[in-house]
Each structure stands twice: as structure tokens, then as C-alpha cells.
Length: 376
Image (cartoon, rainbow, N blue to C red; front, side, top):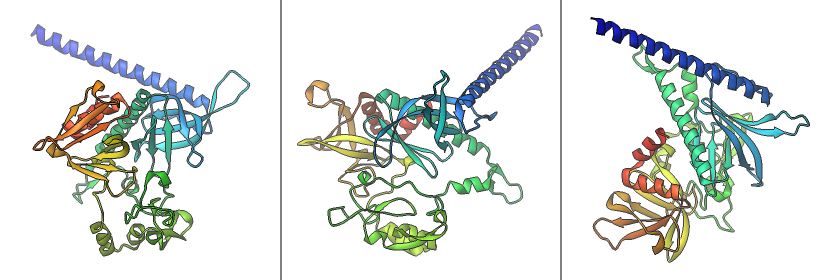
């Protein structure tokens, strides 16, 4: 009997200590918010549910000029602030918010030269770190924030006892996640992100110029941008759009099905694929944007290309390391066909960490990468 009371007493003490620690942690987080709020001009960040995840100096790559710009980033559990340091005569530091992105609906993707891209619902930003390790740290923090936000959104779902359907705390917020062409100004895909029309796959040449769909931002050829639609974000003015957006806005399901049947490769969503720049040995070393799904590996000339230069059914291949001394390139690995050992593809990553990630994905599948990111 005495031992039971002792166990219960220890449990009560443990719960009280945990509650006390949680309270102290919340107070520390709130104090951090207050200090940051004093530094930031024109933005009130005080929110009882908000806490800081990561902060630091970083370089922003200008959209048009590609010039590097010094910035300071604050990543919270629900928003990201990209700030510019103000020049003050006093010793105190002040920041002006240049861009604010919500974590909800955010996407993060790798680029080359220690760069990565953050896409919000309506805007995007390209950032660059000093080292590959710094980029990995930032991407891990961002992915962790995104996954936690998704988990919280899912926890808000509940059963509607009358209608027997799943509803969220805010149905309109859920609808906002669905991309509607022309509702918001899109992020324009950069010219160097694709070597071909993103709708028909025709290669761009001197006589075949690039155009942008004003509804979705895709880079398309003249033929595929010959449609016009009224766009909500532009006060319902008529704008040039691609065929996919045109038929989507018209609600023409049959034409959309025809376009889908003409698609050259599987549409690669961020959740169903992993991609980065790799070098492929073809006589010399050729740089490609390589994307892998659970079934196939695609080598593309540019990240937004819709036609692959090479497609490998990875289920038929095994991945293995290549000794540093046996190649003129660093961070090398190879894929070998399980039934025909002569069919081998040799790749080189841009860093040791990126090589590890590729070998893990090719060995354990995409699930292994997701599980690793969740534990970071």
C-alpha cells in the first residue's frame, strides 16, 4: 500500500516539475519575441502561440539582376521574415521586413552553389548560404516547421456529426491551399530553369522564344501561350495564359484530360520526389537536374524541363559507393543493373552530405529521406 502511495506521489511531483519547466520555457520564448519585436520596424510579431526556431544572416539572390543582397532571416513556427538591416548611427540594431511568408503552404527546394528556394502561396525567394552545411541546417529547420504546421492543421480536423464529413477549423483556409490560376500573382519560372516549353516540350531556340503564362508563371512557347483569360489578381483584365490554365479557368474537363494524356513524363510533385543537381559521366562529366521517385530516376537538362534526357527504373538497379581514388571527381556513386552488370550509370554529387542523401534515397526510397528529416 505504501509503495502505491509513493509511486503516485512521485508521479505528481514529476508532472508538476514538467509543468513548471514548460512554463519557464514559454516565458523564455515570449521574452525572445519581445526583444525581436523591438528590433523589427513596421511588424508586430507578438503572438502567444509563436516561437522562434532559427535566425541568422543569409544572402538573398535578386530575382532579375541576380545580385547578392545581405539579409537577416527570422524563422518562427508559423511565419518567416526576411529583413534588411537598417543603417543607424546609434549602437542599437534595427531591421526592416522586406518579405513575409507563411509557413502554411510553404515549399522548399534545393538549388546549386549553396542555394535553396522557398516558395510561399504567392511569392518566393532564393537564398544562399556560405557552406553546404549551413544550407542543410536551414533546409532542415524549414522542413521541420512545415511538417509541424501540417501536423497541427491535421489535428484541427474533426467529424461533422450531422453531415458526416471531415471539416477543418477554417474551411476557407483549406480551399486557399488549392492552386487557382490567376487568383494570386504567380511566381514566374526563371528562363534558365527550363530548356523547353513546359506544356508541349518543344526545345527553345533562337527562333522559338520564351513566354510566361500570366496565370501560373510557367515558361511556354508562343503556340502554348496563345490563349487569353481574365485574371482575378489583375482586376479581371485579359492576359496571355497557357492552355492548361485557360481550360482550367473555363472548367473544360475534357480538354484538360487531352492535355494530360499528351504529358511527356509523370508530373513530379515535391511530396512524391527528390531532386538536385548531379554530374553524370558520359565521356566527360555532364551536369543535370536529377529527380527520383519511388519508381524512376529522371535526368533533366534544367529543373523545370518536362522531357527527360535519361530515365532509369531504379527498382532494377543497386547503388554503391565509388572510392575517391578511382575517379577524377569527388563524391561519386554508381547505379548498377541487377541482372546485367554492364549497365552502369556513374554520378557525382556536389558535396559529401548530398552524396549521402542520394545514396540513402536510392537505397531506402523516399520514405527514408522523410524519416531522417523528421528526426533532425
